[in-house]
Image 1 (cartoon, rainbow, N blue to C red):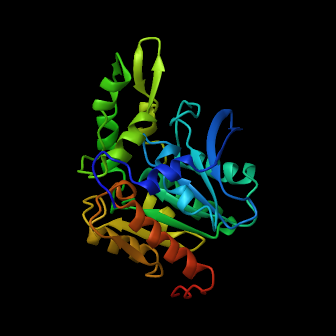
Image 2: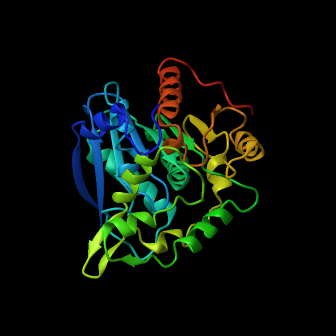
Length: 299
């Protein structure tokens, strides 16, 4: 795969693939989402991370659209969706399910959530698992006893978003949080461009800083232990957010009844680091789920 600033053919072809953009209102807030492929096919719902947006999936979704109907919601407080006074993860989970219904998905979808989107997918799998075909959790650390400590740190990093005179200057200030290297500068530039909006004062970030304020009372460990559908956990080999010991803790919460998949040479933002390896791993899990029967959980 090409690296650096020059985008490879697979990436430019993906961005040129046909898609639709839609909006709906969920509990008084406008929610944007993107869709690729045909609604009659098995569905995937891709849920982005904190301070991110649906365009984080726009170069990946077309790689899946030949076999799946792919939908990418933009959670409230992110991207071009509306803002709320508060952002409980349970509300975001309801947004995800509302988008799935509005998109005309036939049957039960599989959720794929990265980072904060993984937490939202865990909540949805616990509350609405009977309406899902599965949930794939991508480098989302469920810790003992406080799974939200790292998110609090990210909240401090995003607390006072600045405004810049021009787009080029603003993009130069885009940084991945948590900090990590990424060789694919063309992908970073793409997500950075779609992270910004123009205002009367200049260019600033689209996300609402309040999305990182802790509002959910139920620990993520409780939600993960009570998921009601198939689950798989992806982690980056080099991720310090989901090191092997946290993956093992999550495995235990899932009754040791869910695969833990490690993406080689990938940090936390593994969908940017190793996008094609991520797609290959995702396809493999989904292909297995189409014809295998889950092992019964121990009593």
